[in-house]
Structures are given as C-alpha cells and as structure tokens.
Image (cartoon, rainbow, N blue to C red):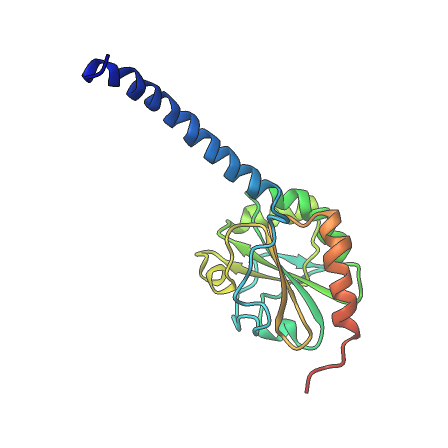
Length: 198
C-alpha cells in the first residue's frame, strides 16, 4: 500500500535516527580530539618572536628578607633563559603546578618570573606565603591586558624565553612532571648552551 500513510513510518524512523547520528558524530569528534596528541600544544603566533616589552608593576607588599620583589620589566629576559608563568591565587591548577615551579626556581640555568593575572594583592601574597615564592620577579596584571599581549588563553600558562628575548615555547595549562622532564628541561639545556645572538 502506498500513499501518505505508508510514508509516515519511514519518516518516523528517520527522525529517530537523527539524534543517534548527531550523538555518533559528536562522540567521534571528542575521541579524535582526545587522542590527537598533546592538548597543551596550542600553536602561538609569538613563538620565535620577541617577548612583549611590558613594564608590569610589582605585587605590592611582596618582599624577601625585607627587600621588595621587583615587578616585571623587559630587562628580566636579558641574557638568560627565563620561564614566564601566568598565575592567579584563585586558579586551582596553579596550586598543582606550584611545586614544579619551586623546583625549577632552584635551577641555576633558569630565571622564573611570574605574571599575577586578575588577582587581589592580598590573595596573591597569601598564596605565595602558603605555597612558596618561586619567582625572581612578579608583575601584576589586574585587567588582563598584559595577558592578551602574551596571547594567554587562561591560567596557568607558561612561556620559555630564550636569552635573546624571543619566545621559544608556550605551555598551556599547568606544567606537569612529564612536560618539565621531556620538553622544558631539554629546551633549557639547548637554549643555555646556545651561543648568544649578535
């Protein structure tokens, strides 16, 4: 039998298949993104370019042995490998990566500096008082303007800056023991051994 009543069951079946097909497509996309490699490896247009030349004020009241910790200036990158870490006291992953920053701060080949992102000075000082101060300098970015110039997607993010002041690598998300051991430290060794640019 043909006609409108015969078409109804086939249309009904087609309508039932649409949600299943949409779900299958979304699940496939999710799996491809999950297994497509390192999710922290988001390309940055700044790789190979000079680090942003920004003067950021120091975190008010932050001192070591009675001496104020300086803010962040372009001179912080001159002549040595520098890790710039963008962090905030309200950021849970920042707490996870902090012990790694403390360990990296003890590496004589590397200067570790911080950009405190959209944070209150009291909370930022309390965070560093509780977890330790790995930073040789801390620049304050209360509006997020400096983070935009650095191409930050969210906190935490870190940038490895070569002795010539160019950005060598960007790390999106918290540093992990694996990313430090397999990527960051080999790059620090390479950049530390490279002759200075003329």
